[in-house]
Image (tube, rainbow, N blue to C red; front, top):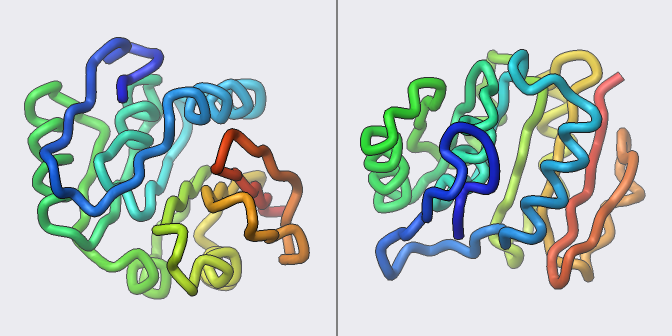
Length: 178
């Protein structure tokens, strides 16, 4: 795993063994960020990374110069690893929160331009993420919710769905605020 672009380009992300994570592959991440670069001006973005895990997605956004990234994960070791990467690479635009992602969504009072959610594929509540994001008005106007999930899960019937992209065993379902 590496940071693909931006001021941290090329940095390897080498988390300790035993973290409960399934990081987004470099190929899938690069494809996703190509789509995002064609739709957003990164320097203005506020991003929420739910189920942040190793921080892989957060670092990529930070490296590309977004205004702010908030990484949320419930696992202590994941949070400690993200904190160590933030300190080691002086990532100033990254805020780290140790909290259950669903609890965070239910209580969140902030607004974001992009919400990225990469819950464990077996998590039964993945399909509830769009409802929580849109009910609680977490996205700014023209913002996107991106959910990474297994390809066998179809979220296209949910409100605000606009498209899906499949990369290997992973699928990104994209929802947009109006």
